[in-house]
Amino acid sequence: QSALTQPPSASGSPGHSVAISCTGTSSDVGGYNYVSWFQHHPGKAPKLIIYEVSKRPSGVPDRFSGSKSGNTAFLTVSGLQAEDEADYYCCSFGGDNNLVFGGGTKVTVL
Amino acid sequence: EVLLVESGGGLVQPGGSLRLSCAVSGFTLSSYWMNWVRLTPGKGMEWMGNISPDGSGRSYVDSVKGRFTFSRDNAKNSLYLQMNSLRVEDTAVYYCARGTDLFPGVDYWGQGTPVTVSS
Image (cartoon, rainbow over all chains, first blue to last red; front, side):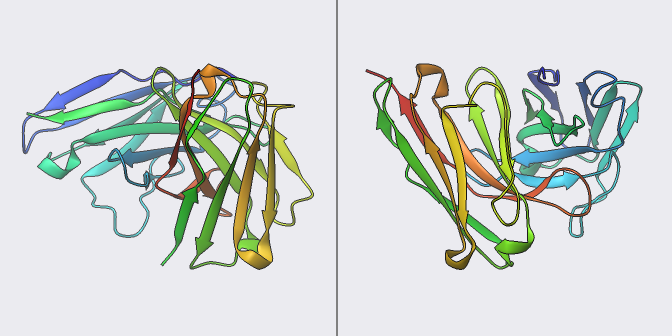
């Protein structure tokens, strides 16, 4: 299964918003509402911030939101803060006990 | 607190072998599917496969099938990844990640252990 497609980079000023796309196919992103997003500060453990397209685990600020349209999922980070500077990865269920990840997007807070 | 700690990474020559470990705490390992994921410089995150709670079921992606083997010892709260016939393209940071019973995916990860395959 091919990796999901994410833009390599995105940026925004403090207090502003940034949106990241994650494009797959009808066999993964488009076929299931099982898209999750992870925040990764290099050298640390990735952290789950969105699951089932738009749900937030306990403790994740509501500045993080997720959505999906067709074969593309989106992560929006509103009210950008310095600590949001990190790599973000999407992940989708691909059917038949398979998961597929995106290539990652580096978010820079200007 | 859920914790996963990988170890065993290092430098290995092409064709060589390496065994990674993942020690877990803060949850009952025997209740969860466990996954292995790697982060490569050019390709991003790649899900390599998973192992069922009792170890009887294993799923591998094509790129590692026949070369990598997942195993676990629930009594020791540990997960293992045996990597054989290593290739330069296996160079990556390797993570263990807990499967979640809320949805088909993973929730908690370790901090990763780096593997470099080079002569």
